[in-house]
Image 1 (cartoon, rainbow, N blue to C red):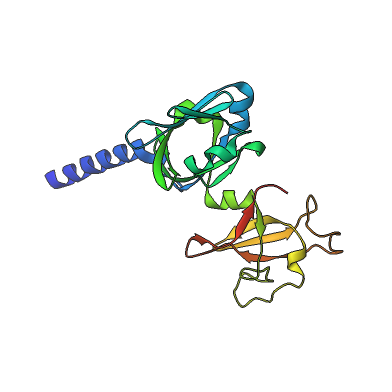
Image 2 (tube, one colour):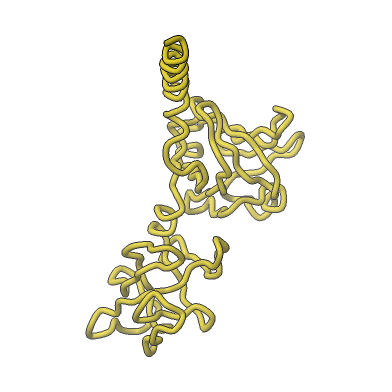
Length: 219
């Protein structure tokens, strides 16, 4: 009898404590973190990235970005600080800054900056940030096919390659494993004319979790 009581108490304790972590343990914890640079620049806000010691790695304040005693215009002088802020995507003139997010807790996002871990406070900057899973990230880009990863009729390395696939720009439709289903874009394209019939096919974006294609973030 006592064993049954102890078992019930253990289960109650376990499930009660599991609930404490449910808000951060559900779903993917790694992905990509978008920072709205335009909002910082236009509304004269501040944003800080900290290193593992809790020290400021860089500070964006109004229209400038600070690295210790050095400061640069966020948009006009991005070429001067790119080596100091190596992230997944940095195109401040288009309001784009994307971090590779390793994981997150209820308090911070852990991202890669200069190939090292850095911290961003969640609550403090939630109004400037947007987290995307890998599939969501891929679906917000323009996948660029190549001879190493052409557009195929089926999501298979043995699938037939679609003719003249390299003459057009594509938008993603869905992600299945290491493959993205794409369709010719009517909004932007690299050729002189669009094909008479939409081209739909598959492009391998990765292999064993590693990105093997280039991605564009605007037309």
